[in-house]
Length: 318
Image (cartoon, rainbow, N blue to C red):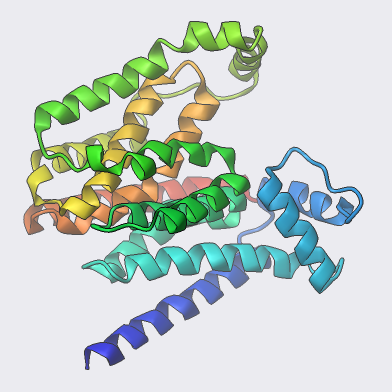
């Protein structure tokens, strides 16, 4: 009976991934902000010239895909990336308690951003989650976790954020609250006090970029809906940290790290937002371990935020 249930759940995740990957490829929400760039890039690349600003893994995957399926396969290209990303994430969430709720939370709080807009990031996160899950096992495979991680960073370099949690996994399996607070402050200080050294090492390039962003983009909001929501969920995790299974603790530390990183790098909005966005799936993953009353509250708060966040993202589509 259990095997049948597992197969049904797997089939459900597979079909759901197909549906939303199709929606992504046919632009059911409209044209996303990154879509034209990806299409222009795909049309331009060839086996003799496919150098671009993108990471090498994405470049090689793109040219191989174009060679196999032809120059008119862009829609299938987008579908394939979104499908692989979603089927990996859904398959992992299906293994957790409250899996239907977790998938719903992912759909409304992260999918539009990562499978409809930032498709490279979405796929990179999927493989980093696989790598982190492998690393968190009692007897992890170094080769397997390294392969998944390298695949992730080959699609988006910001995936390097996951490296400590994957390759120093043991230190992120501690329940001590003083240790947690020390960890948060350390991450914050690394970001906050790195401003001067980063400006110096880059010859003022980053400083100029930050100033340009200050002129052209909306500034960081400390008390945004996202920050308040995540602060509330992090607090629940901190209070109920001993509820979290040891193998799930690294995911909790990923969430905490992303949040502390955001405040530490508040002077560099682009990277602050990027890193925090990497941790949404990790936050969803450890929630089922929390005691029921606290868990229900966390689910409710995250669901309300997810609906609000997704609604706002729709404004980016034309």
